Length: 503
Image (cartoon, one colour):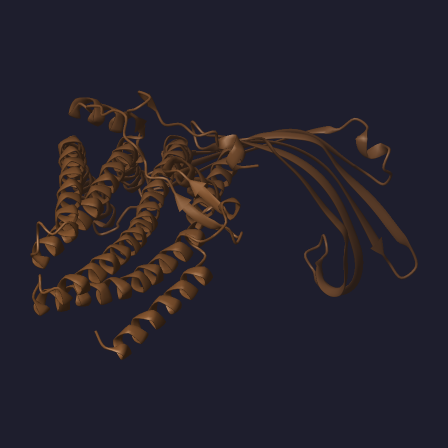
C-alpha cells in the first residue's frame, strides 16, 4: 500500500477515536452509565412516558363524567333569590267595573327560595320540596305599602307517563362506560409496554450493531496487516489483499454509521421515557428462563371477562335498544302528571306571614295524542328496529373476529418458543463457524477471503436475528396481555388502582 493510503488510514483512525470520545457511549466512565433492563424500561414507560400521561388524563375525564352522572341522581339543593326587582313603568290597570286605565306604577320585588329536588331514575320523574318568601313594596305618590307572601313548604312530584325514560337507560349504560374506561386504560398500559419493547430493542440492536462494527473493525485491521505480510511473501494474491483492504475500509465506515444510528435511537429512547439527565445508557439484554403454554380457550374466556371489547359489545346493544325504546315511546300517547301540596300565607308584616298558613294544592294532568302524523312515528320505529338488527349483526360478527384474532395471537405466541430456540442455536453455530474460520485464516489454513466474509456476515446477521426474534416474543406476549387483560405468567387478571390515577 502506498504512503498516501497509509496516511489516509491513520487519519481515519484519529477521526474515529475523536468521534468515539465525543459520542460518549463506550468510552464513558462506568459511573456515568445507567443500566436498564427490559422490565425497568416498561415500568418507566408506563409511569412517565407521554402516552402514559395522556392515558391517565383520559381516564380522569371518564371518571369525572361518571361522577357527574352519579351526581344527577343525588338530591339537588338550590337557593334562588331576587335582590331586588325594581319596576317603574306605566301599565294598563283593570278596574273592578271592567274599565281600563293607564296608571304609573313603582314596584320593588324581593324573593328568596330554597328547593330540594330528587330525580326518580326508575320512572323518570322528579320529587321536589321547596320553601320561599316574597316581599313587594308598592310606592305611591303619597304613601308606600308592603306585603309579604310566604311559601312555608311545598311538596310535589312531576312525572311523565308513557314517555321515554332516559334515566333508566343511562343507569345501565353509564356504569358500563366507566368500567370500559378502566379497561381501556389498562389496555393502553399494555400498548405502552409494547411501544417500550420496540424502543428498547431498537436501541439494543443499535448498541449491538455498534459493538459488532467495532469488533469487525479491529478484526479486519488485524487481518489486513497480516495479509500485507503474506502478500509481500507471495502467499496470497493481490486480489485477496485488495478485498481485505476494502473490508477494512467498509468496517471503518460502518463504525461511524453504527454510531450515528445509535445516537439517533438513543435520543428517541430518552424522549419516549422523558429522561432528562445526561448520563449514558447501557441496555441489558433480557434472558428467558422458562416458556409457558397459553390455552386458546383460557385466552378467549379471560378476554370475554376482562377486556373493554366485551363491554363495548354490550354497550352497543343497549344503545340500540334505547334508541328503539325512544322511537316507540316518543311521539305517541304522552301524559304528564304534576301534583303539589303546600301551605302559604300573605300579610303586611313578616311575622304574620308565617301565622296560620293556608293550604294550597295543585294537580295538573296533561296529555298529548297525535291524531295524524302521516306515518312519521311508524317510520321512526321501523328505522330504529332496522338499526337494532344491524347492530346485533355487527356485534355478532365482531365477536367472531375478536375470538379469531385471539386464536391467531395465541398460535403466533406458541410459535415463538421454537423460533427463539432456532435463532439462539443459529447464533451459536454462526459464532462458532466464524471463530473457526477466523482462526484458520489467521494461521494460514484458509486463504479464501470470501469464505471469511460470508462467515462474518452470517455471524452478524444471526446475532441480530436472535434479538429480533426475542423482541417478537415479548411483543407477542404483551399483545396477548392487551387482548385478554390477563397475566399468564402470574396466572391472574391485570388490575389497576384507580384511586392513584385520580389524585
